[in-house]
Length: 248
Ligand SMILES: C[S@@+](CC[C@H](N)C(=O)[O-])C[C@H]1O[C@@H](n2cnc3c(N)ncnc32)[C@H](O)[C@@H]1O
Image (cartoon, rainbow, N blue to C red; front, side, top):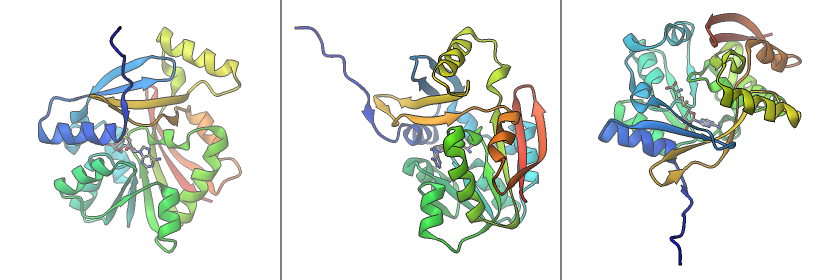
């Protein structure tokens, strides 16, 4: 009888990666795409980086935060810690319990476990002046169909005159043949090139598969059409960008 090939156990692999980086160090982020492509691109240490080592677009994003801030997909809390240093009240929101555990151990004062939909439902009167989507978290718009629902939830959580400040990655900036093949595969079934289905792996764990939409700035503007959001600012560095959305 042959050896059984086991599948990874579904769980909080992203949070487990952060926790191991915090406790031991030297951990790499492993992301698997649904075409079998595996990306071992980044050291988990980048989620803990001090502002002096950030991409200037991240610093510019924090500079645009005013008043109370909701950090969506806060990770290890690097943005919340910097906001606290600047004496701006910040709430770290994440679907990863272990990520929020790391946030707490590093000194992040306020956190919420769940999605923006959960927050809007559980705390219907809570409003923020600024909402952050760092770490390419415009990807949380998921797809052209799902984007409207996510953007509406952000509008509910935001004060009048408030703003969303996010980072994105333009999928069309790549020449990697594996990525271009994935774009073609998406287009063939009527999806946008950068609509990805991913899961994070850590040791024998994997997160559930999730939708993440890498969109160009133009696609982001298209997604905003008919919503309460306008793109007020766009700053680009190669394929990477930071955009500020204002309530119209
Ligand atoms: C790429 S990391 C970015 C972390 C952090 N913003 C940074 O820039 O260092 C994405 C984070 O979003 C969280 N996340 C994933 N899906 C989410 C969702 N639907 N709602 C809230 N957070 C989510 C993940 O657990 C992870 O902490």
